[in-house]
Length: 310
Image (cartoon, rainbow, N blue to C red; front, side, top):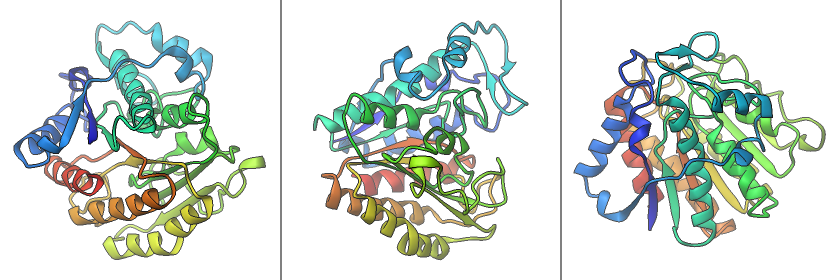
């Protein structure tokens, strides 16, 4: 059974505030899933909030303390303008980070075959000491850190196909040899990071793989990158668990993207990663919702991703 982690508070984040990362994103996904044939094949699970110690594995203590102490009565900007908190945001962010830990633990314990975390706010831009790019806590990094500590794993792979480079995830694991971070992203594009020359530092050298994609890149370009770089790197690394930063904003209909992926590409990329997981880690895959801002394209792409994950 594949888990679908969701909480009603995820749609309360930014409720009533005009923002491209809107509650309507989850409404569109849930409507599509519940009306289709996938719902009966999914286990819908309400996550528990992350514990403070989980967050402090990847975030600075002062930052975590500040976020947990935040009292919001109206919308407040958390960084230079694109990351906003409303009254439900802190609790939603705790639940989003908690969902990932709960998901990886349940997959590790074989209570689930795989899982998708339909979370808001997203996470991959959040750095150790600041919110950024719509993200408050780095959900996928919190889950990866739990696999390394509580789970005792030695090799965790993160594949990030969001159209924007996951600067936060890269920064958190830049000198860590136990995490292979692979990012396919439009370049140059927000946030301006993700150069191919950034390959890691110290003991993490060689465990950071950036694959910059030009504006206009489509399915074939991404599949070539998978065949030529992503899959060989994963085969060499032999991951014990695969995590996916599943952003769907590389779709040709997305307003924040210059890439031209189709809905089917997300299913195909998922199948290729699932094959690696089947070969190396007993199919253990957990994915996290990141970007995707055309509501119809987002819902269709998540459906294709889940169908392949199943």
